[in-house]
Amino acid sequence: MVGTSRLTLAVRVKPGAARPRVGGRYDGAHGPALVVAVSAPAVEGAATEAARRAIADAFRLRRSTVELLTGRASRDKVFVIDPAPADLPDRIAALRDGAPR
Image: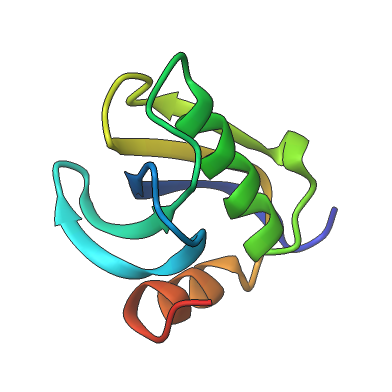
């Protein structure tokens, strides 16, 4: 694909949320992180999988392009998006630093 590359994304997962949402900023262990609230509990990877799907859906990506890099048992995670559209960093910044959706 032209205009694509590999991108890492720091995420702060909030499991057990009343309403799933992607948006907001958390300054965590991996730097400025995108907040991803999911209704799934933090049990046996359910919240991590829900976060992976929420990221893919929020950015209209194939779910197979979003993969956990680190943080399996932590709320602070790093995902890899490969391939990542060229405009994805701007879209991430808008959700991280702007209004949640």
